[in-house]
Length: 296
Image 1 (tube, rainbow, N blue to C red):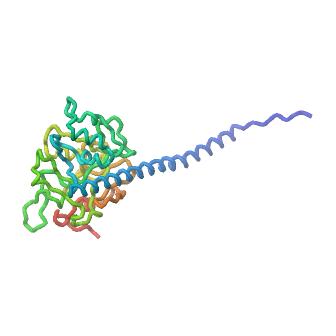
Image 2 (cartoon, one colour; image 1 turned 180 degrees about the vertical axis):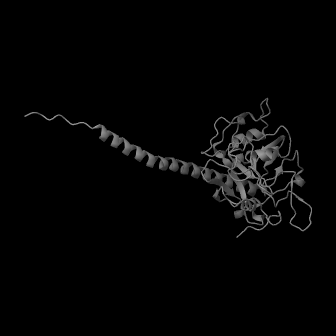
């Protein structure tokens, strides 16, 4: 008897197998990518939660939240992140600032080019950027601007504690007696309804020295703002490809951004939220800030 030769795959069978594998890859790949993004988003939320704890520790010690811009000794223009360094486990950098350890270019020697994982979201690591910052603080309205007065025929009102949470605490520019300082337990609209910190793709530097000495130069680099109208790029996740700075919430997460509220909890806010809702979330006292009531 003759032995039968082993039968190989036909061309049609190979094509069927290839098609099946392609279909399986097409079905599984989005799930794999989605699970990775979910993990990055969760890590980002955890980092914001840690920043919330650092803010609470700072407030407990000082009696108020830090400014978006601060000074310490002869060091002006320190961002809200810089003064939180001792509370996020970076006492080494804070000690360097306190000791006045400066290089020839005027920046603290250990901080030059330093990347802090604590302040950059894994979805937007920004490798190679100088002191990259992925989160921005609620700075209310732009310094030097005014908003409509809620009182009939009242004059436009300058910025006060009803408009935002983080203000200019740089004593080289603003006398201590004139600085606006916020306590979370005295927020009229409630700390759980007031934004403290948000993701921001176009924030600039967690150190944020400013050689121009312009009061709002640091504000737009490390903060998010609101206005009487959103304009072209004022809404969440608008103008994502614009160069920095751009002071509004933004992220690489599909559909929205992670936001830390003043009571310490973190939420994922959809990017299609009505701008009036965003304004209310930004203002500690929306009525005094002159905002109309939210629509039911």
